[in-house]
Length: 164
Image (cartoon, rainbow, N blue to C red; front, side, top):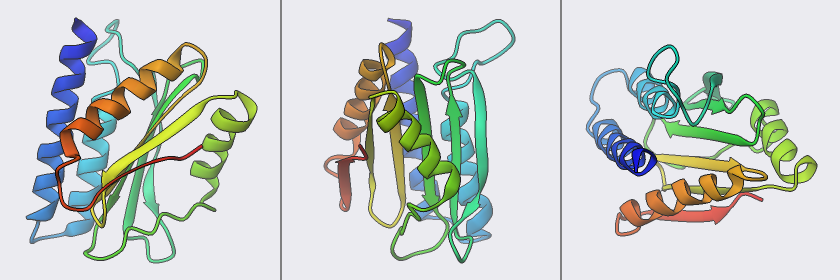
């Protein structure tokens, strides 16, 4: 029950943050960073001794040749669950550089080395979230992806695909 409540709150935060990004008129890079960081924060422990889906933030920076896409990520201590939030700071295509070292390495580790899966869900030109899991965490990652799919599937530009 706690996990489903937390998931519902996280999905609401993602949708509200994404809506805020669409209306951002000042400093779109700061807004993109804030949205991605808030999404990752939803998976981290809320305080000392509190459980989280992720145990640590693993990445946060602008990526791509023009540095207009913000990537934030977190992982469980054992690496069986990983979450990536990618937010576009500008209007136009959200071209995720698949050769980006951190993202490519993390997905390769989950998919190729651990035999897990990763599902991406998002809205074209705005954001994509990637939920990756292996072992027992594979179903957790799939559950988060399915919940987000249900929330955004009627949004114009909705996209969902297996990242591996």
